[in-house]
Length: 411
Image (cartoon, rainbow, N blue to C red; front, side, top):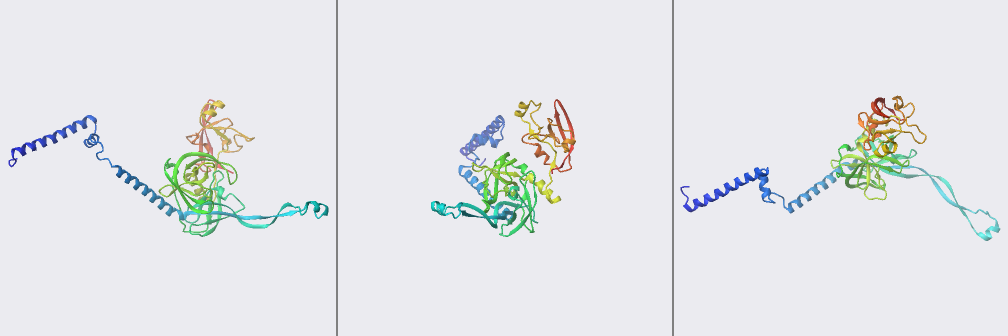
């Protein structure tokens, strides 16, 4: 200070006083509004520390680029494991010919000339392609997962076309008796296999990738979209006729004819669903079976060579508020045991019959889990294996009680 002139000294005092006053003011404001000093500065001076519009645009562009790179990387990694499945069989060769119903009668020939009625006759058979779909390799030794309706024709032969162009005869190991799933086997080792994800961890809005043999001719066609719905139920036509599919994933990624059986992937490259159907008369509404539903089938085929399903032995309707009001039931949830179309509600000799269930009973809980439209009895049973003992919480009139049943194999 000794070297400062009076004028400089006065200026320094003023600056120090201003800074001190600002710091004290900031501390007081922070204490009053409950913010840290840095947050208080940003509140007092809007825009301080906030990214500019140009910076935000750059960040968005970088995120889009990163997502595009992820999609490209996933497709490159998974495509070798996605296969085309083609069904072929001997079909009759039908020939059309004409027959004159009047023969060579000159009288009729005079009036009708060379009149002929078309007729058809079979002239042997020829090998033809009768169907095509998609599948994906789930083990390096040649196990392939697809939809049951892709391989529904028991009289056809199936050939798998690999990504490298190789074609290999396929054997149908098992068709799921309940779900639209099937497991095939080809004699080839060292194959690239997919990684299976966890479909219980997916969320609406999540980006997904579908790969498949679109229209049966454009192999490894890729489409990208999002998960647009969960727990969907649809009536799907095809294969063996109309079939109700439950608890499906809905996506707006394009799923075209021929894509059936292909994988629905997350951005980690894991299979979270098996593409199964599309909504007719709509755009970009497709459905996939959650991969967790297929894991039991895969394990069953690996351990026993077939798909065995646990069986309780009842016919039922899900209880909702509407069903409760219509039938005067005591609860608005559960599974009401009821027969239909001449069939009893409880199958004679079944686990349910042995446990003492009767028509009119309401199964409230299955092994401790409440039965609801989003948690059906069928989906709960599918979690267990043949031979497992489960508990059933039953409502019979005003009485509630619990019984045990040992699940048997569905025949």
